[in-house]
Length: 628
Image (cartoon, rainbow, N blue to C red; front, side, top):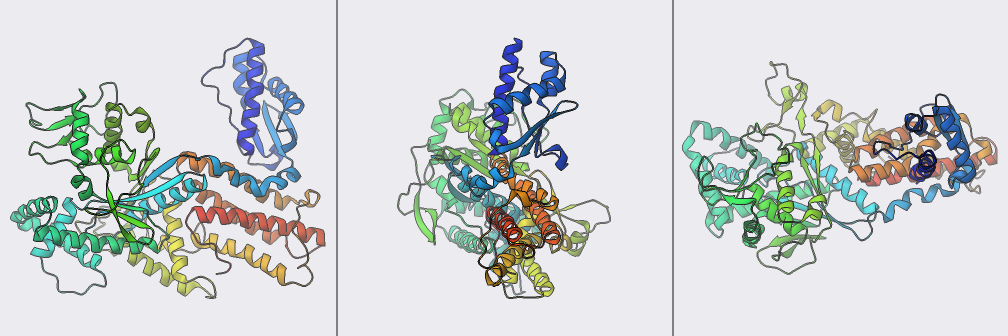
């Protein structure tokens, strides 16, 4: 990778300068390169000389000139750059040798395939309560998790994708109570839609009939005990909902390796083993008095800050077992994570759920599942504190390496724009900038409804329908919409904005990709040029081609950053700019016109662009159509 190679080379010469000056290297000294905004400033630039100036007491420009000489004389990167230039007030600018770059370009991104060699990553994402249809907030989680699984698999990691099903929780219990104690006469296309309405109705009924809340406790007890009429009813509801949710996700290209049911964690005795392990530490104890009397709590380390202390549920000491003996969600999550890392003697058994998909079960066969080197949980930012408690439990038990390899991919929730909220019947007179979706009130954008609406928009706006289906395009467009935001950004979902097909959209990317395919296909059929092989010619480079080539050159380092930061949005931003630069190139530089040498040259650029965008789209989980 050019950028990393360049930074390593600069680092060696910086170290030599420091040693020659008799200076220690400050811990704050960072060698970075950036992409200059203007072509005349090169393809990479570094301000390291200005950082060194105060340390070695020399003028920045003098240091930059010293580094320039060393790089030109002894640098391993010399062949990659046609020029290294020191300029005022002390920048080092690097100009790529495009002929050398072109020889390596096709293999550059593939060189990242060994990063994760011999490392198993377990990614948990989606993990929707099995009590109603999925909404767009759930879909953001799934798209992020699925793209991360694709990115890490590309980097050579062994990736295993899990979907955790909370079949013992309050939400499922509420839906069961609703089925038994509310009445619905209207028809629904799917069971999940019926449960969506039922869940909202029972939460309204709790307000007017408080005694119904007692039925939730009855159902919860039945679910945990198993085998009763109520337990079987809960199981049937959960299984039917999960099958519908998986079918919805499949339309977006999202798939899983394993379904882990919370009931399986309880039945396999994970917590009993975990309790014994924690009991051997002085950080886990039973409270004797006060409001937590009778509870088993995990003490927080005094030297570590505790987040969200204003929240009553987020206390310095985290309750794992309530005074009535009922486990909290965090307790089961700690046990589950010990299993994820292969640190429990207990294990699941599995049954086949679908093609390529296994599910934990009360009866089944053993499989080589779990035992991960790294665990990634895609969960919204509101779950930061519970995730930290899982990490703390690993540390308390002495599993420091596992704790360091537990990654929480935190993201902002999806809320509704005022216009979209008003369309769903929410009062917006308070003038807020966004409105939360609420399952209890039945307010939200269901995944299936959004896909249907987007498909209709695409179908109306398509002039030709000879390529992939409008539904496939719709799913890709929604997926891109949810991925393009930075992870911590709250997505204020607006139906009109989400269904746009111009600007920074998935549809724009698909058209830009299919345009390159169209050019390459046309070249194969054109008798005048079909015999010409694409061939890069540095002497034919024109000004309009440089920005596109520079951006293609930056792809490996963009991909490496996305892997390191676990951030699919970086690929979205890159892909959109790549598509825009290609469209500008296509308009300014006719590919199939001019001399044979020029055509061969521009066919090569079109081909390398297509290969790069193809890789980006695949990692984002989007189609790569020959035509639309």
